Length: 469
Ligand code: HAM
Image (cartoon, rainbow, N blue to C red; front, side):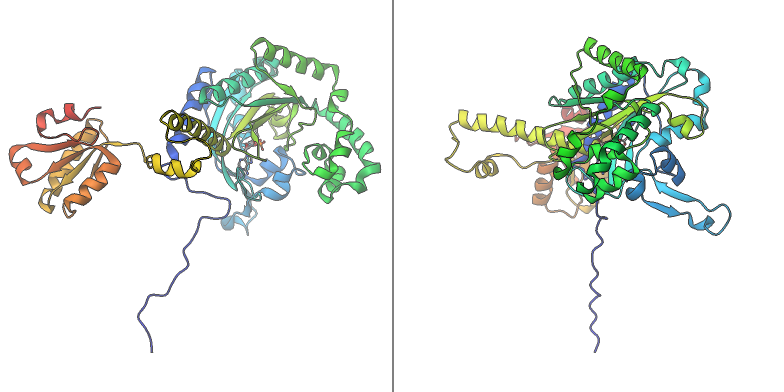
């Protein structure tokens, strides 16, 4: 016996570590991005868009074979069409954008202009990390790179300070005030080679006491041991030699000049000798901005630094550079947590002032549920309600005219009951426009404004003026 029920199918979900951003979230994302564009433009940056996937060797060479990113976090595949031919190519979803930007700089010979290139980007990045709050497999970065031939001043400590000052200005403009800038210099490639040798030597006698990950790093890339968060290893790590003692006079002078310029423009910073960062291309200045609100353990809001040898590593001309990438997801989490805190404080003060709540009487959550209006999307200007199917075409035509005049409009359907029109309109829009046989015959609409409860018949000719906020 067969029954005719359709087979139950499991619903397909977004892949682990990826997220949908719904319309109640995207306005904040857009504000953060628009502010970045406006602030970066003031500093002379132009936008660059590079591909989302690149040749795998770009990251292997640029970011470094021994890094966690390249070693275990990349989404890599063999290009299917070409796999069998001599053109076989391994491709990778970009885990970061600096390598791609420098590749583009080389490919388009941007250095030949002789000018400093100031480039920014906003887009998704991909890393196969263990997902948690603030850490995703597809995440967004807002980043910028300053790169150019030596004659363009790309190596100047002034560029480092300018980039840091711009970041401070950006975060302040967004209203993030609890940021902390941590700063270090990892020296030139030669300084780092000497430091690495010293670390290896210092780690050799204590290596067995470290966790498995750090034992491996002590062999392959001892610098990485420094940014380990493993609690049990901290005592050993704190006793390791400091990079500051291995800087050449040149590197020292460069770093001192960065600090002096930051002092001159009043950007506060904290020196962190353990800040070596998880990518191999860094030379000299490295930095991170952390925040205390909203991020928990993933408190690095952004990171960056200088990469004076990256262009040459990728087969290009000498082109010193410095840049950063902000974790946009983390920026949003911080802003949301901050807004919640502010809202809560404001709301509490209001309730106490109105004698409606005093701490301890009713749970705060309960009170909030009773008194806070439901959250909704930004209100539309008007909702058009055709009162019968015959008015549907006229409703759409009216919506067209009003939208063309710049208003935000939603249109219902003539099959809806009047109650449904009103309920929907009330949650979506400031006004409802009723369009029935009578209105069509007299070239009018019936307009009701929810804030005042006023309802009037309005001539089509004066409707626009009546609707403008
Ligand atoms: P990064 O430190 O690997 O540096 O990443 C920069 C920022 O991206 C981090 O501080 C964090 O906020 C965010 N981020 C990283 N991984 C994730 C993740 N799985 N989920 C959410 N957010 C994440 C770079 O990417 C360098 N390219 C920065 C740079 C530019 N250096 C010089 N120029």
